[in-house]
Length: 306
Image (cartoon, rainbow, N blue to C red):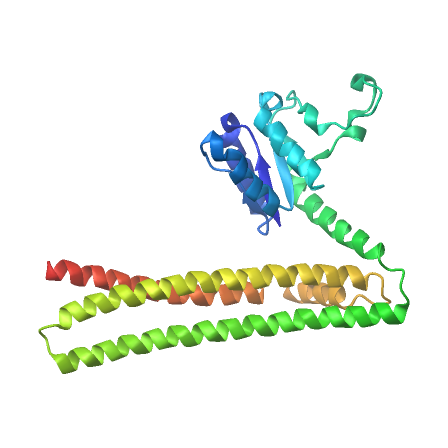
């Protein structure tokens, strides 16, 4: 779940604290915050993050309603039909006019503004649950809109989609096996280098060892970073598939996966469930640490030679 953070630069310190508080309550929320960039490339950078985001969280500061940049960001989310959640940093702060729908009557003061807003005002404690419920509702409504087929056809489509989730897990395992093999090969190369040193002799031992440490550690770290990124991507894709499966099951007599999750949660009790994706992501981190130690060894050998 990715949320683009809309805010004025003057409010940035307060907004960062609020985002950290939100993420402490919702560890699956990834905040997309635009860094300080030149104005000529600002829209390009913001557009990339907005396209990536599932929703926007707008922190309404005292001067936010005067910002043309914030208006542009809000309009992008409205165009893309993505949800906007607003959090007022102070009770008296005003909303931007771009958040209000045109009602055709002109005078907004005589009408309940919340009925005509593109956004939903929330508080920090309730934000995570609201976003999660809204996303699940969107998926469920999308499924309901297509359940006009016969039960047999729907079940067959459900079974076919379920198979894609299982295939995805198998592909992820194959990718992990591939990277484990490649990392094992790199370690074997290091062993071969040590063997070569014993054959060549001590004259070139230091130089060969140093070059070997740098090359293998660099290649290994690059591989591990890519490995972790791929595992995370597979995890996000599988999580999305499970949400769709759960939404489809609500139209079936028995929602198996939802019940399975509840049983598993009850069984774990107070212990936090650790997903397979999080466990798999630890493996490349362990390899990366080993390569980091090897890189440090290369630095030490360089200092000795100098």
